[in-house]
Length: 398
Image (cartoon, rainbow, N blue to C red; front, side, top):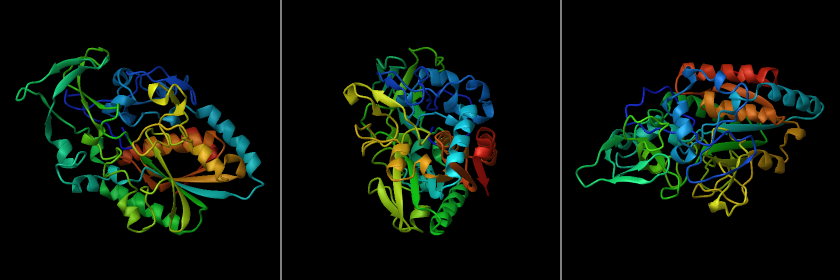
């Protein structure tokens, strides 16, 4: 799911499903990414037990996560905030003692405030555009079915005999316009305040259509634990607008209309109201993700898998983590840097990124009025998670 998420109805056989598929990988660990290997959330003794059903949507269902992977999802469900409690506070306390005597360097981090998560933008697109509201709500013929596990062809359907499915996941219809407007307005206010030395924008940015990763849609009620379950394989650009080359990848028009120099279209370096800006593409909830891929497409070398991807949404040899990029610009934890977060959604990408930053030793602030989720309950759940996991190490600001 990207950063937009809400609890979905039970699988009716026509909803696209996705999740994680490989054994748990420790933070920063290299994994071998085979054809059917996905990614799992970091696992600690507090992991799954702390996930309550109210925080799950249909794509979060554990059995689906065990059967699928990033290749069937696009955005990786790695909720760092569920796994970081004790070590996070220790790291934060150590950093605070070092930073108290230094002047604070202030950085604003704007998480995934992009057109592709705005329901009004999605609804405004022509119905023949992939990922548009009209397109995902329509029924689409399935040309072929494949085995979930092996991706082996089961049936190539004759014209006129194809089953039809909707691409509507629920969450891919976007956040309410009012929520996006609130977050964008707060981001603009913070940027225009002149209080920050650097603005960081993150955006979800999936592989271009035709790449090896495809979304997985179920075709019947066969359990997800069965590797022969028949599924349809669908390009991300058919049901999302946040893949390479799609119309929803840029920073929200609600921000760009107020600050014309803001755009992610010109690479990772830019400005925001004249302030230096850094743009980070990612394919995972956690903007500070460090996991690496060693696979055929990386030539066996360990490349960052889910952050700082290239123009086609693919891993690249010289990719850098967000920590590396900030540190190279003089905004590492040891420099007394304070990161203030706004964005969507509170209970996923915002919480995961903020709390990971805290474990790295950053001073962190959650600007609560500049964060939103799919609904008020999910937003409050995210704030409660940040308070619980961050403790005194995270400053909660209205």
